Length: 73
Length: 466
Image (tube, rainbow over all chains, first blue to last red):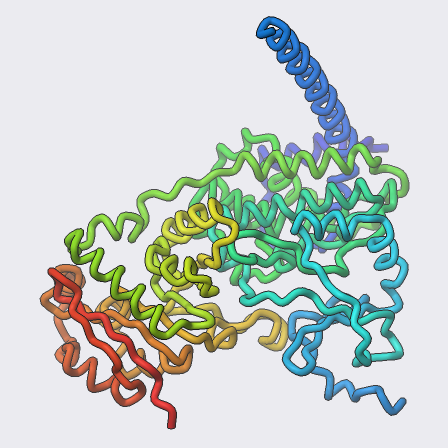
């Protein structure tokens, strides 16, 4: 049974070796929905890392601004 | 039929408002209202009670409305009638500059984030849900909000990519004029088209790979396949998706350069005194007529439009050059109280009526008339470069507004000579005398002043009332 990872690899391969263009009518939503599901783990993880990184940056910004304030006084 | 129920033919529906079964816009006694249907009752009440409405309205992200006690046009379906705040001029995405599309995209994503925080989600992400009030975008569709269902992907993802990401990516990576494809593709630029038009190097950008190339491939691969999504798309993934799209949009840039008129004011043959005199005359004419609204046709970066907008006149500055409109918009953004809206418009091929029954999107002419028209350094381009006879021009302008401030440049003018240098002069009727004779048939000429140090004249005209 193909896993989301296999589906994604299969899909990504089409970017490197594009299949010939045809004039088939594109389904209005299935592909967009499935892509979101395939990307869910990636997008969720990136967001988590980014949010965590922001917190670290804010923590150090506060720490340094506090220490520079202390020095100023 | 109940006595107070109007026949469907009596209801003045707005042509663009028919897709959503949860309500529709209609016009009654010159005012725009929205019927909210019973089918949207729970979503509407949730939005109003959850604090989302107030949060969005207070931040001027959503157009405010009032619930009004008028008889619904379709009482059997109606839950409430609301009256949205009035918008002076409706513009469309194919008339926006790069930064206008970008700001509208970021507003949509910001609205989605705030909605998710309040337990709601946007059910669509159409660029037509955004309007510009002066230089600030605002979300106008009150019925676009639905309660968020955890596990479900974003319904509006595809529409967001087609309406916003594709035109911005094409403009940024390939050519700014490609955003005009929005005029042909009323539901946004198809992603397979965007994918083939983008350069190969765009495949090294992760957001573009994910949201354009992979998205297009996925649409093709999974077309027609049944989607089972229950529980597979977490809340964190939804925030991740919106964040990724926001990141993609923010990274897209376009700098105005190398376009036809970008340096027009600098290159033109006005002396500093001549330019100052022209500004003084335009300002004086605007003070005389005190228009309630003004369209500046061929506005370039809006230098003269601002003479009207700074006096509180709601002004639209149209130009065909994406660089000029971009610069005008960026200038407007510095002053949000500005009454100026710059828009892209090719007057030789102005926006037509588009969409279903030709009634979804209004033509430029259908959005008029206005009180006053400003047409500076314009007619020689239309007449000589585009062969538009002066009679046709007068007929076009007289339908747009009561007042006309227009500049005529004679054949001795260096700019006109430049236009004539590359073609045979077949314009024997292009003279000041002939111009006055033709325009006198439709207008009373109230003033005619020669601009200092130039072969140009500025006219103030009033439409002849018959």
